[in-house]
Image 1 (cartoon, one colour):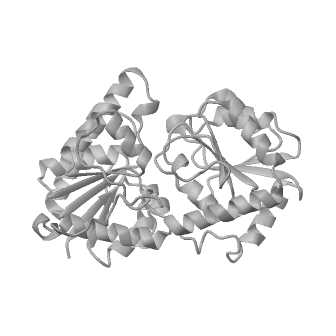
Image 2 (cartoon, rainbow, N blue to C red):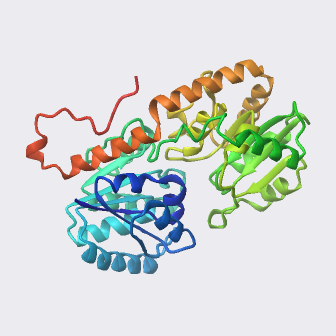
Image 3 (cartoon, rainbow, N blue to C red):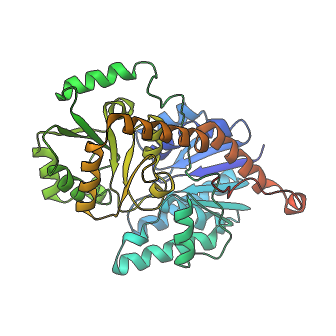
Length: 397
């Protein structure tokens, strides 16, 4: 079988987002994984049943550390000699694509799961743009996670290579048999969580799920929530991200507010979603966030910012609300409108959300598309000529 090496910057991406995808692909290919060392590596190796090579990669900009990572990646690729090298996330892309080009790996694919430069400024913005251009120059194939990412890559002149979104976007899909309201034990866990947090029946619950960092819109979320009625609660499921820290006043407001409930990192977000009436994701930037698919599968409407990824899933009045990023007033208006919306209306929106997720983002269907994508990369062009292209770039009905 052809060997495929998949690279992510941190093992959490493999453990939580791409969970079980490498195991499935291993039934079609010889799959090996590369990611930064840490406590998650052993869990990933056991979960996926494939070799995991620890290779340190830093998230921030560090020329010396990045050069060391590239040299280590070169040595690893010389040992493994994959037919396909596939990277996810920015730093893994820079390290893997540059090393893959130096080693002349035949197929070098990078998936852009989100772009950092659109929300950056000054010199940092220029560095990030040139890093993305370097990734694309070294890659043989470039895959945007969603159509919004694709448009930005084209608009900013990051690459002239063909860009195809796989399926309807997203890199993982959703296990809709796991994320469903009647899944075993979830209702009991949600009831226990409600009692633990002291949230009364009939109170309105918003939830936020994700890393709590400066790009997630936490100042706007806290400002919007502070103006809501006293029967509203906000559940935060995610840990503080020290690498992109939220400003101190916002953190203090989160900790002091009696109806803001910070759970920290949770392994199973389903009880928090089932407890919630509406999920809120006020991010400044995203690639194609899994959490809005998880909420949709759990029949929870979403208030999200009108940015890449979010606006490819959320449709105003259908399965949620869209608001401009960095706009606390608009976010507050949407949250207040959600509170005024009847339970029957929210339930109808939730049902439409699940129908949309099941039709477009079911996990097994995505895995099958990924296997077909790799088979296409490994098939000589002469054999592909005349065949209809069905691996990527599917249009929404």
